[in-house]
Length: 102
Ligand SMILES: [Zn+2]
Image (cartoon, rainbow, N blue to C red; front, side):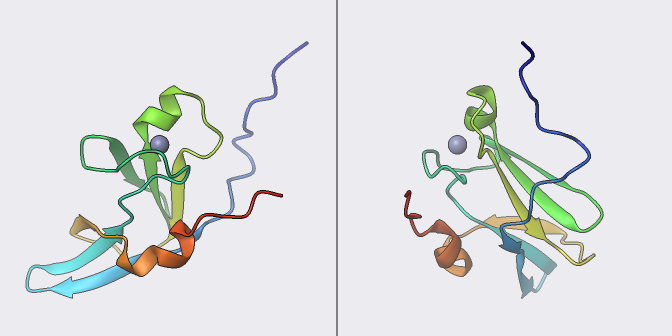
């Protein structure tokens, strides 16, 4: 029996749009301080941030290590490129609200 792996052909649906702030230094992307599973605090040391064409990915290293199904935030950028990133839950309260597990 083979273990089904996440297909690279079907990217995970985005959690929502990435939020941006304009600062004196340019456009800054805002990243939630919690990983998608809600178990870990994200900092520049505990997550990996990478951008693809239209999506910003924030992978929680602890969850990735644990092979958690929800280890990466996928936030749509619509092609916007930020110069820097800041961790703040404020724009993402909807995303971070605990989901009902039914
Ligand atoms: Zn995590």
